[in-house]
Amino acid sequence: MIRHSDNPRVVVLNSYCYSDRGCFDEFASTLGVFRAAGRHGYDITRVFPADSVSEADRLRALSDEYVRVEPLPANLWSPAVSRLRGLRKLLIGIEPNIVHVLGEAWQAGTLQALRAGRSLGAVPGLHFAENGPGLGGGVGRIRKFLGKVVLDRASYAVGWSGDSIHVARDAWNWLGPTAVFPGIGVPREFFDAAKPLRERSAQVIFVGRLSEEKGVKDVLSLAVPLRERSVRVVVVGDGPLRSTVQLAHDNGLINYVGATTRQNVARLMADSLITLVPSRPGIMKSPKGAPLRVEEQFGMVIVESMASQTPVVAYETGAIPEVMGQCGLLVERNTPALLVAVSSLLSDEQLWMSHSKASAAHAKQYSEEAIAAKLSEFWRLRLEVPDCPHDGL
Image 1 (cartoon, rainbow, N blue to C red):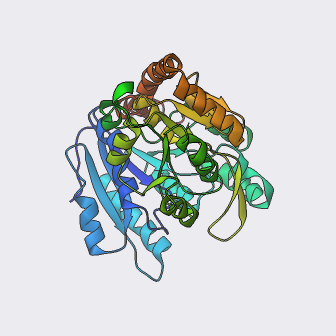
Image 2: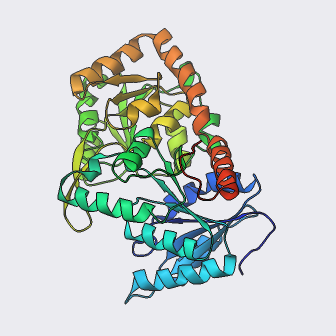
Image 3: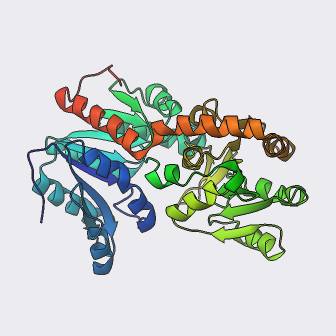
């Protein structure tokens, strides 16, 4: 049953929801910002793909008084077309004032969603993370072209970082309203889990995709020198280098937790002395096998660690310096520099305390409540002047 109210109606969806099956746990963890935005006076419907009746029921169970979750089903023969038709039917029933698309300007689903929203009189907008490296090479040229085409259908653009907005301006010639804040906030449990230094375990932690560009091999290389200081390395996550990480665990070098819930991450992070974020520029393959250059687009683990009052040691790459600000330690992209920075924090209690305190203050701007307040105000301005160019927030 479609919900209507006197509040402005907002439909939020991911640009990949027409052809790809999303991650339920990841989707559930992103609802906090939109629930908080609902408390600011918006009637929000969050759309996500469902490939079975049981999955649809599981999605609907996430609905509450602030966010209604609607599954978008598809048939096996033509998932993209059937989901597009399902989206139009859903939008017609809701009559949204805003269609907020989480994704990249070059994704086909983004174009479909923005066009559908605009055709029904809604204010269509994009919330994206692209920060430039993915626009290099042959595939990048296609992405540049698609970005211009897609943003012509948008009324606003929100970037996860300042570099994202530079891409919109420079690569896609976007002159419309912009804002900068991530598409997901830090939930309360990270702030609540923080512990004093004396109550923490002698461990450093890595949380993320187990891949070359996330630097997990650099983390493993610290295991032996840190073990000599009676400090263990904890690794959380999954990915193509899982077997390498598992072998290090089996050999007693590290503690590999595997993929886990965000609540568990909050607990593990708050029990650690340092969070390692050795992300580096890398090459990934697109779904069609084309090589893509990537750099860290935001680094949610950084602000989660800050909220836990756990200092971060990270490589200086991508959006990491912007996100960290003056908190934590940024180093050159090599393991000796990483080890020196970690060792300095482990051996200097006052240094650790100063970064811990600064991190806690810095992280407040990334809480779910803070992000929701920014998003709600930005939506309010867009409803007042839907297509006014050259302004920002």
